Each structure stands twice: as C-alpha cells, then as structure tokens.
Image (cartoon, rainbow, N blue to C red; front, side):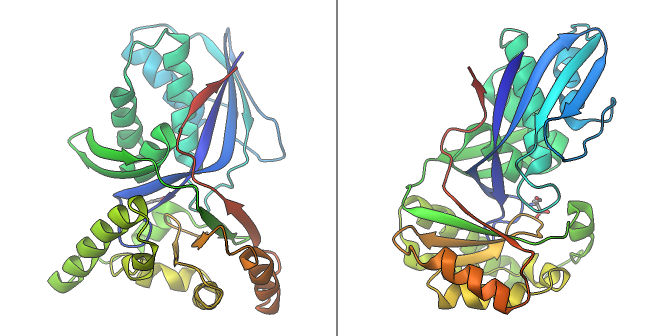
Length: 296
Ligand code: HSE
C-alpha cells in the first residue's frame, strides 16, 4: 500500500478570493492499493463515503480513465486530520490524494502541472488544490482548464493560528451568500490588497498584512454566518496578530502571528472561553513549503 500525505490549505487570505492560498502543516494521510473491489474505510472516527461517491476514489479513477487503464477496485484507508467543511481544504486534500496516488501507481504518466490543472478543475477554483499539491504560498488563476500560477516558499517565522468552530460551513452555502455584482470601487479595493498580500507575505513586509487582509468580495457577506467572528478578529488584533481573515469559505478564522509572540495561543484560548466559544478548537500551524508527497 502506498501512503500519500496532503497538507491542509487556507484559501483567499483576505482579499485574494479564489486566487490566493497557502499550505499548512496539518495533514490527511491516504493509503491506496489496487484491488478487485472498492474497499474504503476511515482510520479515525470521521465518517467518509465508502462507495464510488468517495472523492479520493473518484479522483483516483479519473486518472486511470484518462490513461485508459482499467480499475477493477481500490482499497482506500483515510486518516482525516483536516476537519471537514471548515475552510481548511479537506475536499482538495481528498482530490489531491487520489490524483497523486493514481499517478504514482501508474509510474507518473502525468506531470505536476497536469495534476494542478485537473485538481483545480475538479474543485472549481485553484486556491486550495494548488497549494495542497505544491505547498507554500500560491497565487493562481484558473482559465479554460489551465492554472496559471506562481508558488513561493514563505518564511517559517509565522504561525497561522486556526480558530476552528464546532460547526461546518459548506462551501456551496458560503458561496451562495455572495452578491452577483459588486461596485467598481470594491473591485479596486480587493485587487490592490490581494496583490499586496501575496508580495508582502513573500517579502516579509508583515506590517502590510492587516490592510492587505481586508476585503469586500466575500468576508462582509460571510462573517454573519460565523457567530463570534467579529469578536475573535478584535481579540486577535489586540493580542498582536499581523492579520486575521476567514480561512477559505469558513467556518475557520485564521490569524497570522509572529512565532515570537509566544503568548498568543494561550491568551486567545482564555479569550475564546471568555466569549463563550469553549468548543472552538485552536491550532497553531506553520507553513508547509513542500506540498503533497508519498510517504515511505
Ligand atoms: N475561494 C473559495 C471560496 C475557497 O472562498 O469559496 C473555498 O474553500
């Protein structure tokens, strides 16, 4: 059995809706082996689809079909450390796990960019799947089935503190909350900030991050779906975060914090409890600059 390890991802990073994302050191692990039937099981207490609707199976089969190879069956063993429907890229991790696993078992007929294009097309946007495959900070555009991207490794001086609520937020629901049209000035507001976020993270101009994380495309419409979000953002900034934003479509909120700010996690834990958000989980994560890989 081969094992694929896939990082969690945090998309949008404020203003970069559907275009910016980064990979974090929280991993799903997927064991894969060819067999005569579909045999899918979770290795933890997370319930996963056990038939042909399983996303890992579907993306694995997509590659076999593309390469004209028969697939009588597949054994899948999933370890699901990335919480589902929380804006941390769990569905991209499944898609990427299946694609990388199939490509590996077939002797790598497809290149990295083929996998990047297929994963983003399956997901519908490139900002989770591309960093899940490549690691680091990714700036990406998906056009006509092709992803135009730049991946940049970013410094390990930052911690990404994930505030993970106890409720799910489906991406389709969070996308349905967005307006069909926005004023021209909101477009300018966002494009300037998305560009600033990408280049400031890369060049360590962390004093820019707070302004760069502001957004008028999705966060104003999604914040009301996450009870406590305003208070958590206020707390994060009071405790010295460089930036705070909704991770992907939510429900997770992410704070970008200097690793030297060692008190941040302990203080925010106390703050969450004071706010009555005792059931929210708190994870301090680091950038993963490597992306999905086969574990020996
Ligand atoms: N860019 C996507 C969205 C990410 O915000 O809907 C979903 O995880």
